[in-house]
Image (cartoon, rainbow, N blue to C red; front, top):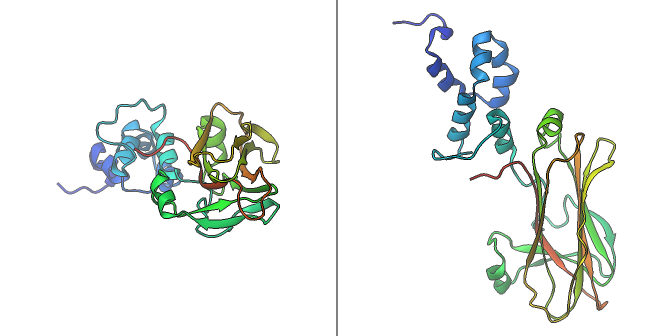
Length: 255
């Protein structure tokens, strides 16, 4: 039987059609068409289907989800918010706040270092010198797709990770500071662990530092990330801590 109006289609067919429509179009346009479309677009079933279709969950997913619509958007936005974390583009996107000694430098991981590093995609790192070297980035959450209501109401977890290592022949001190900032750049949350001092003739292994911001106050609009360090023997050259593969991610990770 011919259908004269799209709304005469069974609801399950309409739901299937909606799974192929971009999420923002569903909310900004389709949801405003009529009450039937609004009700269907608000169904948990639709957003679970979209998550499954785009690989955000698996068919045997059994973890509880408070809001599937929000879950979908957090999954779709999920990425490393720090640009150029592994020095592939030199110092592009980074602000060199303190550039002491012989200044920051980019070096390549040697063959042995690549075997030791847990991510085989990482090929380079940043290295510090004999006076303090610090570099930073500011993440604009709105520019990255995280709208104000999402950050203020849902307040999804914000996970920060960094990797650092010393040289085996020289001691060094590594430091990290991450702040959640308001629209006026006032701090609303801070992670600043004690500086990590690594002694000379250490194992020089890569170490990971991580932190998750949860239940932070409303109003977070930016994230400021700063790291670096100094060698503790004041040798000319680049004997301070090495850093690479830094990341800031928001919400649940992909399966």
